[in-house]
Every structure is written in C-alpha cells, then in structure tokens.
Image (tube, rainbow, N blue to C red; front, side, top):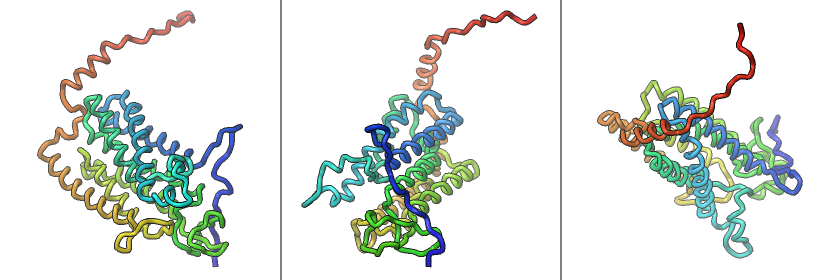
Length: 304
C-alpha cells in the first residue's frame, strides 16, 4: 500500500502567446546557467582569464546539445525510423531526448576547440567544470520529471512516482507507481559535486584528475540507476546499452585517473593554465592594448 507518493506535473509546457515554454528546455537551460557561473568562478580562481568562460560555454553548449541529440537518436533509433514513424521528429529536441554520453563527448570537443583558440590548456578547465557539470546534470534531470519519462520499476515506497496513463510504459494498470529515477540521479549528482569539491584539495586532484574522478562517480551511479529503468532500450548480453557504456567509461576514467596522477607527478606543468609563455604574453599584450574605459567625472561638488 502506498502511504505517500510524488505526483507527476499536470503539464510540461506553457504558452506565452503563440510561443511554447517547455519545462524540459527550462531545466536544461537552468542547468547550463548554473554550471557556467560556477565553472567561471572556479576557473578564474585557478588563474584563468576572466573573459574566456563565455566563449567556452558557447562552444560547449552548441556541441554538447548536438552530440547529446545524435547519441539519443542513434541509440533509440526505433523511436524515429521505421514503419509508422516520423523521421523529422529526430529534430524535435524540445520533446526530450539528450544522451549524456554524446553531450559530454562532443561538448568536450567544443571546449577543446575554444581552449586551443585561446592558447589555453584543456585539463585545468576540465577540473573547474567537473563539479559544475554534475550540478547541471542534476537540474537537467527534472526535465524528465515534467515529461513523465525514464522512470524506474514499479514500487510502493513512500516516495514512489505517480505516472499518468498516457505516459505509462510496460502495460501496468492505472494507479501503479514507480521508482523516481530522475530524483535518484539528481540527488546522486548533487552528492557527487559536494564530494568532488571536498576531496579536490585534500587529494590534490589537478591536471585533469578531478574530471576523471567525476567520470568514475557519475558512471557508478548510472549503472544502478539504469538497471532500475523500464523504458525501451537496446540490450547486450542481458544488460541495457547504457549500463555497458557506464561500465566501460568507469574503467576508462579509472585508468585515466591513475595515468594523469603519475604524469602530473613527473610533469606538474600539466596544471598550468596556458599552453605556452607566448600564449600568455599575447593575452597580456591584448589586454594592455585594449582602450581604457572613460572615467566618469562627478558633477557633485567636493566635500569641504
């Protein structure tokens, strides 16, 4: 018997005149804004230039959304292609569907391009981004809540999630409640952000090591969360594709952490912000040559 439950939202979009305002998009945008703000503060504390974060965010967001959508469409192609399907819906990103692995992979390419254009080293930025990225993912998962999607197996725990019949998968009877996997992942990501910040200085996780630790923590959570979900997914040897992806990426992140730690001990310059002294000097010259802002003269008389 369900003593309590989490009701699903009655709607996932609102209209301002003829323009739709969708909760999924709001969650993603809010996550991007918060992550950018925190990443910017962390990066400048590391000594990074103050005017670079906007440029990096633009490249990361554009590439990340593109990569996330491509991964989703490839791994869930049956939703868009085949008899009775509309392939054009693969472009309807506002309806939901972003694969986190594609977003991180192609978003990382965008960040790399932006950093190289500025003569900056990638690894310090990756470390600055790691906990902020977890917060973005925590906020973005609430879009799944409003869309009533990607929930877990049936359960009667007090925090079970109610799902409208129109969004229910698996042929379960009306009134069945499910594990709120969106909430589990959101809380897992928040816990991960707190953990990364707390161990960053204690364990001296620099030179890309903190981002590798992010990869290990997040994929460990995705394994058990993915195994709870009941939405349609491709299976390999009895496990969902994203479970295998998480396991493989956990191992990759573990190896990367070990390798990066050893390399940093031998080459501490890997944590330098700039790729070269020439790049740093060129940036400083550009700042020195920038026209100074005109000073405002006061019209009020001086105090005597």
